Each structure stands twice: as C-alpha cells, then as structure tokens.
Image 1 (tube, rainbow over the protein chains, first blue to last red):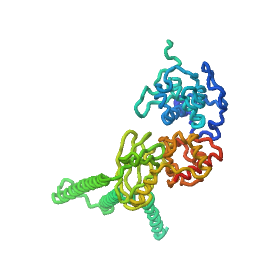
Image 2 (cartoon, chains in turn purple, green):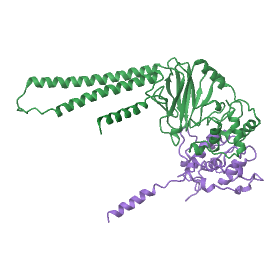
Image 3 (cartoon, rainbow over the protein chains, first blue to last red):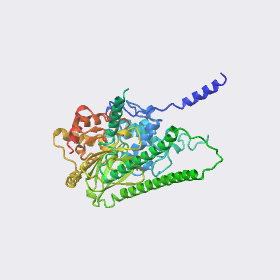
Image 4 (cartoon, rainbow over the protein chains, first blue to last red):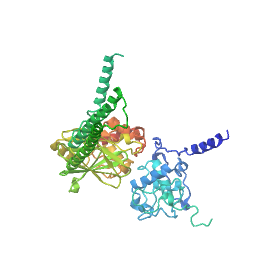
Length: 177
Length: 338
C-alpha cells in the first residue's frame, strides 16, 4: 500500500498534463460577420468598449490555437501592407501601448469589422467573424497583451521583432514590483 | 485441409498481392524512364536477395536434416578437410563482397540515369506545397506567359520536365509513383525533380510526408498530353477568366468580390488577387476540387463552399456565411470559369 500511493500520485500528476485547450477548427456556419448590427458611430471616445451581440472575447483572447491562426491571417490578409508587422507605417503601430480606440479585444474587433476614420477599411463582409476575433486576439499579442503561455512562438522566416510569447508582459511593463 | 485447397488459397493470395502492382498510383507500374529505372532496380534487388536468402537457408537446413557425422578426435587435424572448408568460407565472403559492390554500382548508375533525365528539359514547373494543396507555376522568360494553377500538373508526354519543388509551411513530399521517386518538399529550400511520361495519361500523386490534419487529402494529378494538346491547354489557361454569362453568374461574380472569397483566391482579370489559396481563374477546367478530395461538379463545388470544414476538417478555407441564393450564384459563376 505504501508503495502504491506515490505511484498513484505521480500517475495523477502525469495524467493532469493530458488536459489540452479546446481547438474549435469547425466554427458554426450559422455565425458569420453578417449578423452583427452595424455600429451607429464608429468612434468610442476614451476607448469605451463597444457592446457586441456575439461577444467571443473569452473564447479567443487566451487560446493558443486562435492566436496562431490570427498570426497566419495577419500575413495572409496583408495587414503588414499598412501596419508593417506591427511596427506601423501608413497605419499606426500595433506593438506599442498607444491605443487610439481602446486596447480591449472587443474594441480591436470593432476596428477591424467596422473600420476607423482616416484609412482603416471595414472588413465586415470580407472576413468571417471568427477570423476577425482571431486577428483581434493576435493584435493584442503584438504588444504583450496575451498570456505568454498562449502567444505564438517564433516565425518560420525572418522575424522583425521577438516572437510574441517572448514579449514583456504589458501589464507589468515599466512598473516596479 | 487437402493439398488442392491449400494450393488454391496460395494462388488467390498471390493474385491479390500482384494486383497491387498495377495501375493507378503504383511504383511497380512504371510509365516513365525514372520510374522504369527504379522499378527495374527494386525487382532486381528483390530477386537477387531472394536467391541469396534461399541459398543461405539451404546451407543451414541441409546439415540440420542430415544425420550428424561421428565426432572424431578434435586434436587430430585433417589438413585437406580444413583447406576445403577454408576455401568455402573465402568463396562465400568473396561472393558477398561482389554482390554488395555490384548492387552499389547498379544503384549508382541508376542514380546517374535519373539525374540525366531532365538535363535538357525545356519546361520548368515550380511546385509549391501548401497545407493541403499544391501550387503549380509554369516558369517562362516572358512574365505574361507565367501561369499559376493548382493541384493539376499538365505536361507534354514524351518530353522531360523539370519540377522545382518547395514549400511555404511544413515539410511535404512530392510523389507520383508511376513517374518518379519521391522528393521532400522543404520550406525555404528548392529541390529539383526531373521526370518524363512516356505516354499520355493521368498519373495520381500524393503527399508522402505527414504534414498535418489533411495530409491524406493532399493529392495531385500529372496529366501528360501530346505536345499540341498541351500547348493549346497552356494558351487557354493563360487567358483571363471568362466573363459571367447568365444573370445568376453575374451576381455570383459580384458576390465573390465582396465576400471572404476575395481575401485569399485569385481570379485572373478581376480584382481578386490573393495568392495564399488556389488560383481559381480556370477552376472549372480542372478534374478535381480541394486537391483531389472531390470530383469537379456543380454539386461538389456547392458542398465544398457551403462547408469545407465538414469535408476537409482543419483546411484553411473557412466556413463562410452565405444564404442559399448567394451560394448558388457563386457556384454558377465558378462553374463558368472553364
């Protein structure tokens, strides 16, 4: 009995490692971007969170699969054309801590979905809603706002900046403990 | 069981096994010089090794089956018998060395033949592996004659063709067993594969390196045609996409450009210019959909667009929200892109 107990305990510990995050690779076709009500105003002064009829922040924000999908789509959809790998160019930088329209995932989702004045186009019809959430989650990761356990690892090709999971945590950056 | 029944069973098993050697996607049914060379090599290796194995087994079994000779005095040396035993061992050793060197040489010369196949290839095709489809690009000195298509590789029959294979994501492997050996498809690296199809025909190829969820549904087809047919095909494919004819197809064209399709796919002659998904300029002229997963038909097109994740779970094509009329219109448009 005395010998069994440590074995049992270590087996339980090992089994705990089997828990895996949910990967929703089959989104429901019924939910697209078309079912979102259009915002009456595109401005949220002070970064007030826009209310969304279908808020998926909780599902997407800290999910490694969705974050890495967001990273892939960021390249595929040529976000770098204006935001230059997050460094900023024609569009604002995404890797700093300045947020013109709020840093929450809901705000970023609204920015991509509805567009913003002075250049940011609306992708309401051209990107499925789940992919907008993935992009929004990744944009937060670009400035260290995603948990490092979930943020994407290094690129396969040349990297313009350290991989997202190596960025300093935005919440504690510049503050003494 | 009687002897006759056993013989019957053996014969049936042999026939079934041999059936695997012929036809559709088999390395033992070569249709080109590269595959010929490899098939000849594998048959020769197998035959020779079988003979050697049988000889070794015979040498082992015969003394076991024989009545053992009476053991004499071990201290008395029979010089003549020792010499003859020595000769047998040396002869076996020499035969082994000879066979190994011979097989190495054969393999070396086969490799030389493979390398020489494409040395005068007039056509270079760049094949890029993606999760989970093949991008096919016909290189040309004139930029307006460079053709990009997907999953189907048309080649002129009887002419050597050079394939430059690379990948954008993970390691794949390009393998068309009837025409050549397999070659790894590596991101950031170009490998060269030369092949030739002796006769016109359709030869199926398959990704041969596990590359993710839909590895099994990542096939390609090499379609070998007589030169004039190939040239006509190439010129046809170089044209921009056909303009929609019917009102429904026209609606589909407009929808395609307004919906998520436009983000990834390219249709020549429209503003759709995405390069991360298969080029759809002449999609209806291809024989299959989704890298050989479905045959090309209006129904399969609609099924694929309506729920790609149901047909090929994990593929990068997302589920797009379309109502019935929109789906029909887009399918009508794509169906016209011959």
